[in-house]
Structure formats: structure tokens, C-alpha cells
Length: 460
Image 1 (spheres, rainbow, N blue to C red):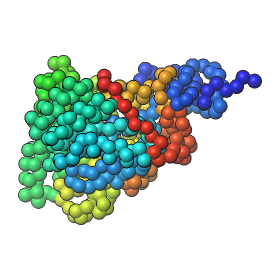
Image 2 (tube, rainbow, N blue to C red; image 1 turned 180 degrees about the vertical axis):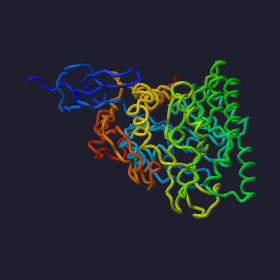
Image 3 (cartoon, rainbow, N blue to C red; image 1 turned 90 degrees about the horizontal axis):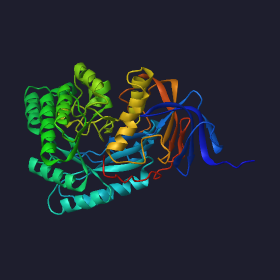
Image 4 (cartoon, rainbow, N blue to C red; image 1 turned 120 degrees about the vertical axis):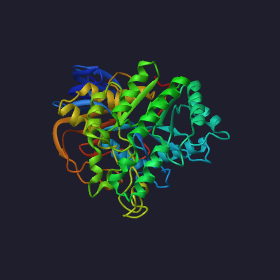
């Protein structure tokens, strides 16, 4: 008898990635995709995926994990709980934030977050370096970190503890250009937000529903335009995070037409929620920045997917609905004192699969491009995101007919689910990370700390 050739083989499935669909088998050996085809030799383990869809593991490049916010509130999720949740939703790679605050050395921040992730992460992982202080030796630290493979930088144009002034932004962009790094931007005009917030509070408008008005759409429009012009001036490669407006889309489109090196993303909450959700009795659950916008904005975001908007992320920002999180300043706190963010890691892929594949809105190839292939390519994660021999065997087997009503809580440590009660069609049941089955039929089989750090190559 011929001995098994592969560690395992997934047979009879529909294989899909950003290039399209094909029927066939996929073989795994030593953590990598070893072969794709029909009638492959036997594996030590065989998985029959007849009637199932096999896709690359998700790559979520916008996650806040075990991070202290600028307001001094710790995320609800550790690396263990956040990445556990990610695996159950089919995401096998995460990029979270090594968050520098003023007075901290970039090298020390990276060391601290690396230790936390090494101990707890169950997905493979990389970091964006939040740069909030360019003084002293921090630019030297930044150069060193980029040369070591941390090739993504995050900057803010708003928030007291982390925002950079324009001269600091330009210095950071020039460093990134010289070193071959990507700069991600939270782009909102700080003065517009401050002025709008002060006016609302003076009028006694303090409820969660008033949060939307405190972040005027013009705050996004102005800052996105400015960051595009800064990219144009410096030649730096820039990713605009969480586009939420029709006008933001148009600015990105026009910048690219001029040859500016701009990328842009949106997030699941902008695609599935509008600002009306903040008017619910539990509106604090849904606060995020920028806020959700109008139905017209949401329609424009869907139309821009795969064009101006190259990826969809979760912007997972988990805070519990108690005094440790959302209500640190009391349950009757005004909206500026309520922690901003929603959990999103676990449901990013299932929500989009239901809308794009099950409902036929975009199709499997674009679903994979927006959630796996595109993020991996843009951020230089070269072993991730596609079903290609030699790539990491990060695989998700989806049951396209499984109907699943979303529960009140997920596998994270947040305690609530923003999409509870919604019914989805299509759900992952088996998840493979680097050739190891980490979720099997709803059971977690990964161990904390089994994830690996990902070196970002020069993005492109």
C-alpha cells in the first residue's frame, strides 16, 4: 500500500479565492498548501468537503487588542480572547496596534505588545505602530522597527493623547517613504469635532444619538483631503482607515486619478448600520468614530467596494457594557465620556459572506479579495490570503446553506453582540491555521500562544 503523501487532504470541495472558483482537492504538508487539483494522493487525514466551500483564512488588518485607549480605558479583549473569537469567525491573521502614548519609546511599546501577543495569540499576527510622539529617539526607533519587519504605521489627526500636528505627520510620512513603510491614518479634523461637541453639550444634547452630530461629515472630508495632499507632497504610501462618507470615497477616487499612492478601507459597521442605530435605548453599544452615517452613504460604500475601497476590516474595539468599559464614567455619562468601539472580529466574515455570497451582492471572488487577498497584499503578508501552492495553509471550510441566528454574546470577552438576533446563511465550521485544525465543528482546538508573528515585507 502506498503510504500517505500529505498531512491531510480536503477533498471534493469548491475552492475559492480572489481569482474565482474551481472544484477540486487541496493538500497540506508542513503547514503549507502542497498541491491543488483533482484526485490528489492520500493524506494522513482526509476531510470530505462535498457541498462545502473552501476559502483562504480571513486577514483582518484593523483590530484593537489588549490596548489602552487614549482616554485610559483598557480593551475588554486580551490576545487570547480576541484571537479565539477571530478563529471562530474564520479569521486566521490579525493586525492590531502597538499603541505608543506621549512619553513612551516606540521600541519599548513594540516589545511589550510582542510579549503579550506571543503569550496569548491564536491567530498569526502583526502590528501597526501607533506613532503619537516623534520626539527624542523615536524616529530612530521607528526606522529600526521598520527595518525589522514592522512596516505599518498608524497616526491620528484627532484625539488629545495621540494626535500628531501637521509637521509631525509630514516627518512621519517622509520616514515611511524612505524606509518603505505604509502609513495608516485615522482622518478626522480635530477642531471641527471639538467645536461640534462643545455646541451640542451647551444645548444639552448629551445622548448617544448625538454622537453622530459631534463628528460632522466635513471633519472626515477635510482630513481625508489633507492626508491625500500630504501623500501627494511626500510620495508616501497612505491607507485611509474607516471611510464612512460619499465625499470621502470621491476624494480617494480623485487622488488616485492624480496618481497619488492612496489606499482606503471601510468597516463592517458602516456597511450594516446607519446613524439611526444610535437612537436605540442601548445606543451606547454602537458608538464608534467616525460614526455611522446615512443610508445614502451606506449605499455608496457598498458600490465602492473593490474600487475606491480595497478592503473591509472589523475595527474591533471591544468594551464591556459596564464600569470597566462603556460606562466607566457612569451609565448616565454624556456621549463624549462613553468609550467608542464595537466588537467585530468574529462576525466580519460571516456578515459579509451572507451579504456578498449568499445574497449574491458581490460574489465569492470579491468577498475573498476584500477580506483576505487584498489585506494580505497591501500589508505585505506574503504567505497569506490566497489558495496557492507554497502559501500558508490557512483554510476555512464554509457550509453555504447553514442558517445561523446570531447569539447575544460571542467568543470574545465583550459580553454583547451588536448583531444579535440577525439570521445569516453560510457559516464556517472548520478552520485551519498553517496546516493545523484550530476550529473543528464548533470546538476550539488551538492553544494560547500558538500564533506566530508575521514579518511585513515591503508593501505592494
